[in-house]
Image (cartoon, rainbow, N blue to C red; front, side):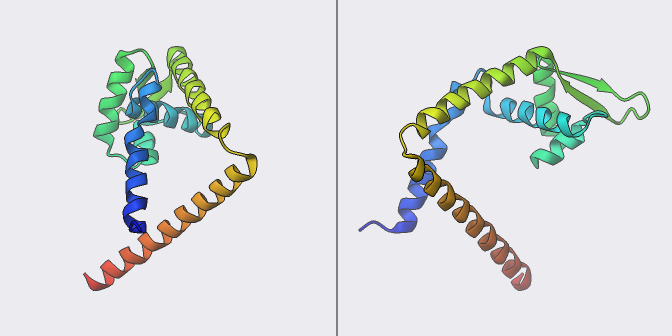
Length: 153
């Protein structure tokens, strides 16, 4: 019988290698940045800063800035330097950016519908519950081990 840990890691790796993002009209990281901008624009009506995007994504600001520069060149976002504080740059989706993220969302929804169609509703419900439980357990274990490392280190 196969080692359960080995099987779990193998399946996890296979999911990672699946790379659904190859179906999208833009690269994975570009999609993630646009998705984050769209979500945060709903939250911050007064303007969305580059630092807020970086913070939400848990990524360093220079990495986000590089992606934003690329997205701006593609006409997907607009960056505006604040008149009050030139250290702040505000980011907004352009109409082209909004249409691009909506197209990506449609592709992802089609992908997920195809998966859900292969499961009975009760199976999908059970799978989601187990995945939530797995995530919560992993989160707790990670925190426990971090605390142990701090105590021992």
